Image 1: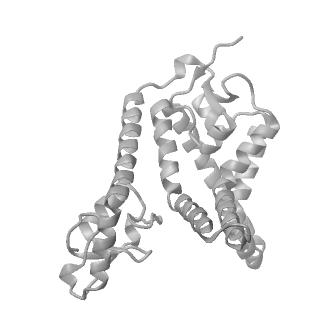
Image 2 (image 1 turned 90 degrees about the vertical axis):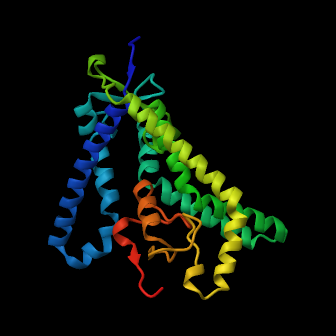
Image 3 (image 1 turned 180 degrees about the horizontal axis):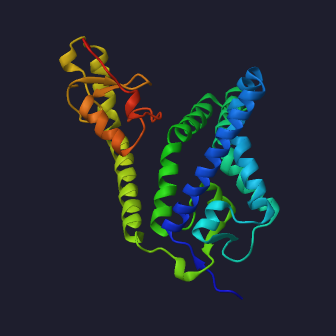
Length: 281
């Protein structure tokens, strides 16, 4: 039996980045081709281009039991539980989860919520409890992803959630190619991220009542000096709004987005170039 050596975090990241480069280039080529054919057709199918590019790329490589260009570049291969080459149906499950796992989860949660609301057998209290759990799952989805990536940086096992669910891991073809140069840095990054997530959980749960009372007092006040920033727990200075409509101090929001591209209140994705400085607020 061959002795396989687990690929390091740097190897897997390098492979994934190279694959993403090729997939992005393929997407650009598909966009150009569809635009050349017909503008109306292009507008109808452009939202599926990313899916088409991923299916095309991995069908020509992974489904044919070949290395992807990124895997070949990093000198790694896929194995099921570090024991055997994954079968075609396992590759198919991986691809479905990799491309559509998050949309499928959102659809499943929304469908379940509708069923619960319409259920004649559940009491009103039970419906409210289940709906609250579903809403919490939707809102905290980002946190589960951050925890997953933190664990990857710490132990280097599963880069994508689809890999974790299917048990597909990466091993090196040649041990001497393994890159341990940044293993300590990646592990420290994962530990710091987990600590930050734990801090956010504790902060939200312990101070939720305080925040609620502050927000209520703000809504009853029309004085700008009494408006409250959720990040620094002080009066808002240089008010700045996110696309989702929440207002923070400019410095607080800018620093927060450097660590995490999400609104501190509703967790909607936010980038720095989309925040708006408010005047006469």
